[in-house]
Amino acid sequence: MSKVDLSVNIGPLKLRNPILLASGTVGYGNEISEFTDLNKLGGIITKSLSLRPRKGNPPQRIVETPAGMLNAIGLANVGVEVFLKEKIPFLKKYDVPLICNIAASTIEEYVECTKILTEEETIKAFEINVSCPNVREGGLQFGNDVSAVGKITAKVKAVTGKPVIIKLSPNVSYIADFARAVKENGGDAVSAINTLVGTSFNIFSRKPKIYNVNGGLSGPAIKPIALAKVLEISRNVDIPVIGSGGIMDWKDVVEFMIAGSSAIQLGTINFIDPSAPGKILEQLEEYCIKYNISKISDLTASYII
Amino acid sequence: MLIIKSPVEKTIELDHDIYLLKIRCPEIAGIIKPGEFLNIRVSESMYPLLRRPFSVCDVEGDDLCLMFNIFGEGTRMLSRKHKGDLIDILGPLGKGFNIEGDYDTAVIVGGGLGAAPFPYLTRRIGSRKNIFTFIGGKTHRDVITYGMKNVSTATDDGSKGFKGTVVELFKSRFSEFRGTKMKIFGCGPNAMLRSLKEFCIANDLECEVSTECVMACGFGICQGCPIESTEHPEKYFLVCKDGPVFNVNDVVL
Image (spheres, chains in turn cyan, green):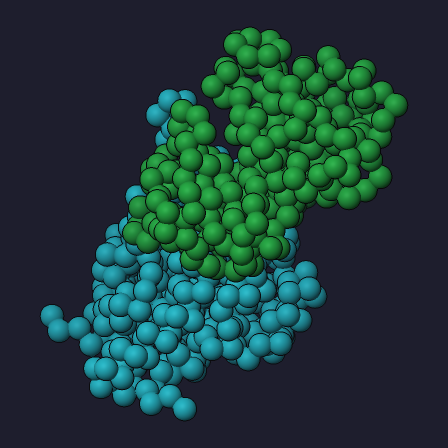
């Protein structure tokens, strides 16, 4: 039995610890389970699911940038039907809270996806992706519009009794306005942040390195931005924040929690070291023991400014 | 799939800016197959951040051999590793070549650094089949024949061997193989693989090719390395997981 209480609450969602694996960096759980014991994690968030399967963008989808990477996968996914039939059975074997990330091109599609998925008891919560920078329709077009984010929150909440988390875009001037819209429309929490829009050129061919031209920047390069956005929400809106953006080790986890996160998501690090989530969790516990932190949730928004 | 830190045994400069790195790694050396690959974290710092994929070039006892040219900072750092330095390896990854099967002659066609997986393929096929190898490059400096058998070379500028592409060289020698049951193994730039595919289809030849794509994770979670499927245009294969070796008929090159 752990000496430290690592459990955290994201609104009504209770997690055994604050470590979540970010959408799009764990597939549907099976590959990463070879390296990290899923049962030890706070939860996993699936690759964005859409109503119908999506092929995603042609290559090149990824380019490395200083201390980061750009990706433009284009929400490639199997669709809700295949997910329920083929992916859920594997996930059912684990005792880890499963959060389904949903992406859509229209408000109706968000609602329809949630309606279908909410019936599946393995799914404990939803994370609504209103901030994918890599698709033509939906994604950022919603994420940049406060009233659309509010409307999606309300409509999705209306069709599920499960916690709804809205994944916010950092590509806005005042992210707290969006978090407020989520709260006012009944949303349970926000994830902050999704990737930042970026691009990269080949200086010889003068062409963008990524087929989609723009991609989403992730990795340690975005950590200070993510921390500032988490802090902005934390200081202005009373809503649980799941922090993400360039977390590479346990120290980053602590920093995100101090800045206002109730839980965090590991993303890009999973590509580099898929065994990192387990290690980070152990080191986090060691940190708590060493510094006499009996409840890790006490770290949340413990900043002294 | 393992993540393991293994010591460098030797770094050899094969040619100008082309290196062979030998890493003592019995855990992976004992199980890896030709055409499979390793994703290597060159540095624990944030530059480079991501792992770099390398196909296994050869296995010598407990040693894994990687062949690479200096392309960017990651490969430059790798070329400077010394005996005893630890290399962070994720592998073995992907699906490799199928060397079994009903053929008596293996024809290996490689372009430039695309020759990298073939020493190990050659070793594993051994003396069970006849092996003929065609290696091409832009100039003689791009033609790498390390660890290969019965090699004929081609260069675009004629500075070594046949003047022309490696596929043209193979075509010019094709009549020598009439009457044998052939299997073709290809690896190289996309344009080369495309023309190899065309020739194999026209002549009804069984052919496997090793493909390449920028990727992050190497095992299917980042979805960064799509390749078009012939049979299922509605979805992509992933180079890292469904490949990197494919039957040439299964993918759009």
